[in-house]
Amino acid sequence: MKEKLKDLTYDELLELLNKIEEHITYLQDNIVKEGESNEN
Amino acid sequence: MKINEEILKKIDINKNHIENFSLETEEGTKKYKEKFTKNAIKEKNNYINNERNNFNKYKEELINYLVKEATNLIPEKNSQKYNSLKLAKDKLNNFLIDSNKYIPVNYKYGFSTILENIDENISLIELNKNIIKFIDLFNNINISLTEKDFNYTMFTNKYMKVLLENMKENEPSFSSIMKKTFDNIYWECPTLIYQLKLNLNFILIKYNKKLKLILEEKIKKTEKEFEINKKTAFNKYTEIRKEYAISKVQDEYNNLMIFFNNKKNINDYLNNSEIRNKNYNTFCIENYNELTKEQKQKYKVTIIELFETLVVLKKYYKYENILLELIKKYKQKDKLKVDYLTNSKNLEKELKLKEKINKNYNKSLGLNIFTKYNPQKLKLNQVLMNDKIEDLRKLYNNQEELEIAINIDKYINDSSTIYDFFMVSTTTFPYLIKSLKETTDEFNLDNELEEYFRFLYNPSNNFLRKISAFSDFKINNIISDKFKLLGLKINDFDIDKEHIDMTLDTISFINQIENINESKITIEDINFICKVNSISKINIEEKTEII
Image (cartoon, helix red, strand yellow):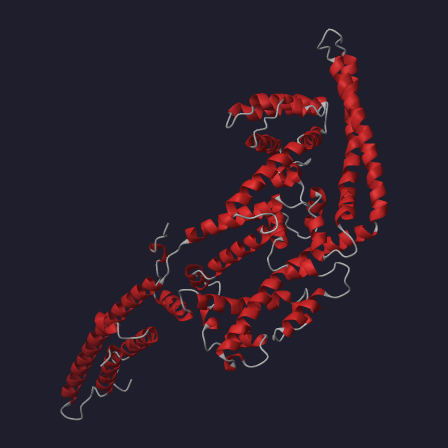
């Protein structure tokens, strides 16, 4: 990954971090807790 | 495919998979349906947790990379870089003061500040420190002061005899010896501190010619070192002072720190910022962004000139009362001159009487075969001396007030400029200190003097050197008119006493950007470092200072 990061501009790197953080939150929010169905 | 595209694709796949994950079935028995849902939830959560771990790893790796990149961008701190320039600037500044005909020789050596420090409120420790500093300054120029130099009165002689005998650095018994001596004399002479001050002043008068000669040698030495003379020194000083100032304001590390330490917000300085556009357009007749490259360059140069002028103007406002007071004195100079001469004559007369008391006192000591010890006369002469000192105090105070009028008469005429008046203010040190004290609420002698001389030797104070002190024009009008001619949108109201700070803030903002543009770091790099620092703290100290 490190090598590939070199191809990105500083703005792209910061934007990517933003997207990754958003996605981690999305994943967190989609964990199904006991008693919940997929409607939730 | 670039890594950001790869990861965004993975995010899309993730989302698609998660959103289409079926947790329920229509088929089978109720028990089967429940088992299906339980397994599906487990499977979905396993998938999400697995992906969450993957994305946390991406995040960690990306942050490490960002910190590394940002750290690499941090310029090295290199304060040593300017040391030689600062030394040269300070040396030339001292030269300008040393070679200035207006400034008294006592100030040039540092004696005036010592005398100013000694007042009735001084502690005994500070008093002795200042006296020792005074003696050391003489030692530095190979003049060794002895007991004989401290015979202004019998009391100063008594005190100084003990001080000179015990004057050793870090001698633990010194303080207690001096305290005992002071206490012993104090009951006979409650004005001992003032008498010591008069004695030091008396020494300066005594050695005045010698001090001037030694100073001339120092001036010649500096002239050789910098290949200058009294006429060219100011240009050389201007050149080095500017070079030093530019090096400092264009230093990439200093510029980064302004934003890194949150003194200023980097977002305001970015290309598309509203504040940036507004500030650039404040003094620009047309829209700044539509100017040609050449027009932008001209605007930048004029803005820098305006900034330098306004820095001086702001100080001028601070010191304006000094000028007005001197003009008032100039108008009364004939009367003040007569008062000064009368006072001088009285002072001379009283000093002779003081000497007579001293002689009588010495006779009463009975130290040689022609005199006889007489305790009653000793006591009487001590009392007479204390009275005489009070007479002298009044005359000296008058002298300090009136001396400036003599110098005004000597150096000023009807065509004198504002600058000439400010220079005359430096001719009488007590008068200058008194005037400077009125310009500030928090007076610090050394700082105020440094600031005042920096103002007097500011290369951008040309307008003070050209405008007549008796002119009816308002100075902010003259300056705003000049910059209007140079193409700026500015009026006298923007730079009057009430608004100059706001105007200076706007110009400083523009200058900050222009200085960064001239340095080895860009606004974008500073922005990147600050953003990364807000994500993960960068240890800036890891960058070592180059020596």
